Amino acid sequence: MRKPAMREILLGAGRASANNRRPGGAPRARSFVLAACAAGLALLLFAPAGPANAASAQKPPAQAWSFDGVFGVFDRADLRRGLIVFRQVCSNCHSLNLVAYRHLAGADFSADEIGAIAATVEVSDGPNDQGEMFQRPGRPSDKFKAPFANENAARAANNGAYPPDLSLMIKARKGGANYVYSLLAGYKDPPAGFQLMEGMSYNAYFPGQQIAMAAPLNEGSVDYPDGTKASVEQMAKDVATFLAWTAEPEMEARKRLGLKVLLFLLVLTGMLFALKRMIWSDLH
Ligand code: HEC
Image 1 (cartoon, protein in one colour):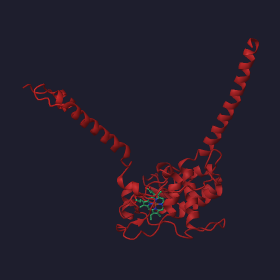
Image 2 (tube, helix red, strand yellow):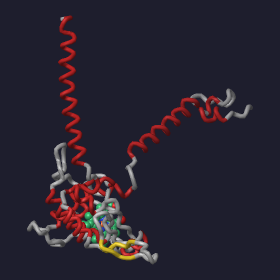
Image 3 (cartoon, helix red, strand yellow):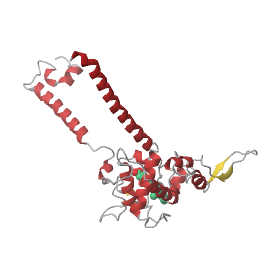
């Protein structure tokens, strides 16, 4: 008996040799291959996307945002309050490495306001003429000051968890501002029987439903100078608006340009249509 070649083994035992061909061998082998393919396809189609525990996170409900839609712009009052929340609460743990104080001009902060905000932090600069680093008040050109010198220091202060940079967080997470809002305003007591690990807090919107960030916002965490009541929902909405701005400060310019382009295309279409009628008018 001839040794079946690899190709024959793969294609189906029935074809391997005439001597050991069983009736129905080939169809059975073929249907096995087909079934395996179907099972593989089904696994691909129905397997949960992402890590297994991500499926247990609740979908954040959609909120009404000032920056929604084609004409949406960042509400300036929300932005100002959001900056207050970020500076007084979030910046104790989170950096904002991609944003400089001077960028606040894009959110209609005046040069004086920006100078005053930057001057509240001490940054390390240098070396000076003696070759030493020195501390100086922040300038508008400095990036927002990070709370920790490096990732290890951040982890050491946060029970081993790393508070991520928030500059692009709204773009980085599915659900964007809705997710960040729900995460901040969605802290609850864990349901009965939920196994919470030490140092973790229950949050239904976070994958795995437990997060190493304790609820950062509490009623009245900040004082709003405009008299708005600092409820958890209000602060969450304001800081999410601020972070949507840091993630896409050019959004308003982008939308304006988009509208202009559409308007231009509309006018151009009208003109080309008129031209076409003019050119063909003799022939009709
Ligand atoms: C006491 C420190 C601390 C403060 C204050 C804090 N956070 Fe966090 N934050 C953390 C840590 C630690 C994590 C990482 C959590 C984890 O991976 O389980 C985190 C994670 C996050 C995440 C990422 C969640 C994700 O999907 O990965 C967001 C968004 C966030 N924080 C927003 C904020 C905002 C906005 C504020 C201010 C209102 C804030 N945090 C205040 C410590 C803090």
